Amino acid sequence: MEKREKNIFYNIIKNETSLTEVFCNIMQYKVFRELFLSIVNEKIEALEGKKLQNFKINYDNFSTELNLKNENEKLGRADLILKVEEEYIFELKIERYTHLTEHQPESYLKYLKNDNLFFILPKHYRHKDEICTRWHNATEYPIDKIKHHLIYWEDILKKIKDKELDKINLLISEFCNILDYRWFYYPSIKFSNYEIELIFKKQNNVKNKKDLMMSMDSNIPKIMNKLFEVIEGVDDKLDTTKDGTKTESYYGYILKDKRIPEKWEVWFGVDYEIWENEQLPLTIQVYSDDADEMDKIIKLGIFKKYTYKEDKDITTFVALNASDFEKENIVEIFTDKINEIIDKLKQT
Image (tube, rainbow, N blue to C red; front, side, top):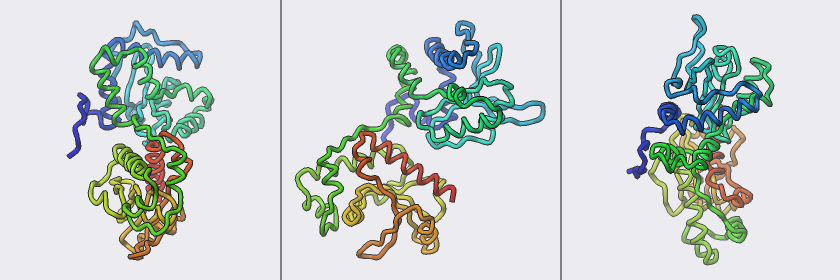
């Protein structure tokens, strides 16, 4: 059973739709509303536009999920709308890999008939360049200006904490905490240079974790705990099965994701035999029990093929390399790599 997070918004803010509603609802607090509008005004000021008059804007000026249309043409549904003298649309993306729809940004701009469109994104949102390119192609609006229409969740959270709004309002505090819990918090895990050297050192005659621990020095328990901590950190960010996680041969999880083709499996973790023979401790494996489907995976040419010594089963994999272990955000790096792979599988 999943442990319940002690947060008012636990199991309420789970996706962009629920996030948008709560984000809009919190606008009824003046301190939060003015902080958000100050961020928007910083962007407008950089564009040399007319700033919003904060004192004239209240909670009733905001709404969500507005169906857009010009005459009889449907132009999509806007997430967050601010109506003052003019309308402003804010498109919210919270997942780094969420694709743009056919309406974003072209149809929104067509509806607005101006540039009052802003995207609220994670800093590492994968499709930032696509926003700029599509906007520019649709309107010839300069890309260097389009970048001022991007607002980042991390900056909003930082400003909230800098102003200590999270300390004076419980709901704002819980809102910040659930965003960290769901999307922005990654544990910091640091491997020393010596540990990295041990991890990537070729080990002889290693059949399982017990043999591996005996073949290395007394630092291995600490190293293994860090590797497992990385895997558990990634598991917290992804939808996985919980069966068959730990055996003498591996420690990891199978993903549940609609982007993965039917009859294919994607697994991540520590595979002791691959670690022994390839000197790669953290891998992402793509495989299938169906021989024809396995051939398709191999023919993609984006994964390395591996045949297990004992049972001759076949898998394919990609791995983190030593340079990834030098960074404290290895959980984030591993999570991103898995999402990139799944995205590639969807495109197949």
